[in-house]
Image (cartoon, rainbow over the protein chains, first blue to last red):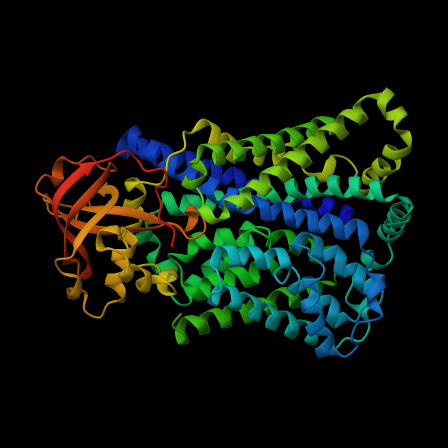
Amino acid sequence: MAQLSVQLRKQNPARWLFAGGLVLLASWIALGVVQGGWLRVFEQISNFSTVVLGIFIEGAPFLLLGSLGSAVMEVFFKPEEICQALPKRSLPGAFVGALLGLFFPVCECGVVPLSRRLLQKGAPPSVGIAFLLGAPALNPVVLASTFVAFGWGPIFWGRIVFTLLIATITGAVLGLQKDPKALLNHTSLVSVDISLLDETHKTEEALSLSQKISRAASITVEEFFEIGRFFVLGASLAAVMQTFIPQTVLFSLSRGPVLSVLTLIALAVLLSVCSTVDAFIALSFAGSFTTGAVLAFLVFGPMVDIKSTFLFLHVFQRKNVLFLILFPLLLTILIGIFLNLNVNI
Amino acid sequence: MNKTIRRLQGLIFLGWAFFLVQKIESGEILFYINQRYILLVFLGALAFLGFGLATLVKAQKNANPLAAAHHHQDADPAENGSAHHHPGSPGGVPAWGTLVLAVPLLLGLVIPSRPLGSSAMSNRGVNAAAPLIRKSNGPVTSLTQSTTDRSVLDWVSLFSSASDPGIYQGQAARVTGFVFHDPRLPKSQFFVSRFVITCCVADASALGILVDWNAAEKLPENGWVEVKGSIFTATVSGQVLPGIHAQAVETIPTPDQPYLFP
C-alpha cells in the first residue's frame, strides 16, 4: 500500500522548495553582512538555530509516535474487518468516517492508501472520504501535539470541531454517489497495484509476530525520515520568518482578516508539514497571525497539500479530486474569515 | 547504496539520542523548550536510541552473508516483505532527504547553544499585554507572593489585568532579566526583559519592564541584571506598562533558566 506513495513521493517538488530556501537564506546572510556586520548576522543565525531546534526537539517525539502509529496500522490492521460494521447512510457514515481516525492513527501520507483500501473493500463512499479528510487531524497523536502546543484553548477545540464539520459535510456530499468504486480511478481499480497489494498481504499474514514487529520497526524509521524532512523544512521556514523578517513587514499580511487566512492556507499547502507536528509550526505564527488564519492552517493543512494532491490524483477520479480539494478549501476560508470578523478570541 | 542509507538513518537516530540526552543533562534543554516537556523529550531520546540501534543491527545482519544465512529463517521473510514493500531505496527517501534530518543536528553541534536574547527582540518588540495564557492562574498567585518575589511576567500580567495599575505604585520590586536598549527610550532608561515560553521557543514572546536608571547607557545590551527599586506606571508609545525606579542594578551571570514559563 505504501508502494504507491513511494512512487509518487519521487515526483515531489519539495527538493526545489528546499533548494530555493537555501538560496534565499544565503542571499539574506550576504545582505546582512553588508548592512549590519558579522556580529549581527552571527546573532541572527544563532537565534535561527535556537528556534529550529526548539521546534524540532518538541516535535520529534510526536513525529516518532506518528510514524510508529502508521507502521503498526500497516502491519497489523486489516481494513476489511471493519467494513461491514459501518453505517451505510450518507450523513451518519460521513460522521463516523471522520472520527475513525481516533482509533486508527495515520497522518496524511498514510491515509490515502488506507482509505482507498477501505473503498475497495466496500466501505460506503461517505465513510471513505470523510476518513480521508478527517483522520489526519482527528487522531490521538495529533490531538496530543495540538494540546501540548496550544493547551485547552480555542485553537485546540476549533481544530477538532471544524475538521469534523468539513470532513463530514464533504463526505456526505460525495457519499451521494452510491457506488464506492465510482470514486476511484481506473488504475486504482484494475491494475497490478491490487494484485501486488494482495500479494504483500499474503506475505504479511505468513509473518510471525516477531517478524511483524521487526517489520513495523523498519517502517517506523523509514516513515520518520519520509515525513521528517518536511518538518525540518517547515521549522526552518517558520524560524526564518521569526528571526529574519521584522514583524512590521508581515503586519498587513498577518493581521488582515482575509489576507492572513489566505496566506497561512497557501503556506500550509506549500510546506506539506505532517499533521502530527504542524501544531508546533503553527505555534510560531500564532503570535503574529490572526486566530482564524492559524485555525485555517491547522484545519486545511492536514486535508490537502502538495504531497496528498499527487496521491489523490493517483487514486481518485479527476473530478472528485477537484471537489475534494476545492470544497474543503472554500469552507476553511469562509470559517477563517468568519472567525476573524465576528469572534474576538 | 541501500545499506549505506540504512546505516546513515541509524547513525542519525543515535546522533539525535545523544544530542538530546546531552542537552537534558547539561540543562541547556531549557534554552529550547518549556521545562514541563523534558520527560517527553527524554522518552523521545530513548526511542531514537532503540530504533537507531535496531536499524544498525539489521543493516549489519543483512550486509554479512554468513550471518544472514544463519538467521535465514527469521530474517529473510521479513526482509522480503519490506523489499516488496519499498522497491529501490528504503522508504523511497533519497539520500538528500535522509540527510535533511541531520541538518538541525549539525546546527546544534556547530552553533553554540544560546538562549534567545535582545537581538531577537528587535524583530518582535516588547509585548506590553501579557500573554493570554496567564489568565487562568495569573494574578491570584502573584498577589499572594511577596512583591519582591514577582517576576517580570508577574508584574506585566498584573498590570495588564488591573483596571488601575496605579495601585501598585511604590511597591518594592526585585526582578532579573536581560538588558534591552529600545531605540524609542531615552538614555536613562532600558527594558529589563524576559522571554516567556509556553511550549517551545517558537512561541517565545518578549516581556519587559521599563527601568529608570541613570547609568542605563553603560549597561551592555543583552547582559543579565538584577534590578531593585520601586514600581511606577510607565507609558511607552501610548502603551501602559510597569516601570521601576531603580535603586540598584547589578550585573549577574545568565541564569540556568533564561526563560519564564507561565
